[in-house]
Image (cartoon, rainbow, N blue to C red; front, side, top):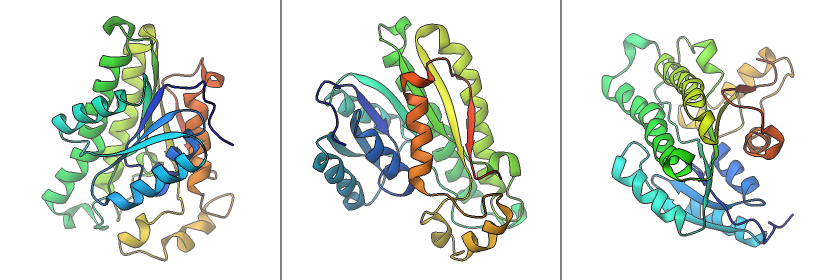
Length: 253
């Protein structure tokens, strides 16, 4: 379905070149002008942009490290070129791609994971509030953060540091929702479970989905598009009375 020409507000989706982020950006392109953020390889991001344009939407790709304050500022300035800001989906995140026990983890890997997954969400959410809040002259909007069910399961033996970073994202979501609710901003979080993305193979565990599937009540991993549907609902007027929520989309696990 092509995007309505009457809809001109812009949505930023971070980490939107692949996986869940790309699915969110493509789905959002039916309703918003989309700034497709990426950190390294430009071609996958440009492919997402082409897909949105092919459906009649508006989109642009923008390279930015979400843990870099100057990059975040430039990203929001670029989004303004597409139209007034509607909100942001803070999807960018990394595991460090070194699964193992905590005592096997390199401090540099853990530090970088926290920089992207926690500081990055903080910087992007702060920038969004400064533009959307009625206190700052904005018209309100919506922030959706992407966590993980790992925040509750803790990922022992694999990614405890990643799980801890996602628990921080959930706490940030709840606290920020209380702060800015009176200022016209809703802040929510989606916590995906095991999903078909390239994350597992990149981490050296290409068989992980098959190993985990029997533990999921629905007996399968999810698809990125299923996560995107939940995100778009939280962004939409249908969720107008929802803020501070953490929505698991996990097949029951």
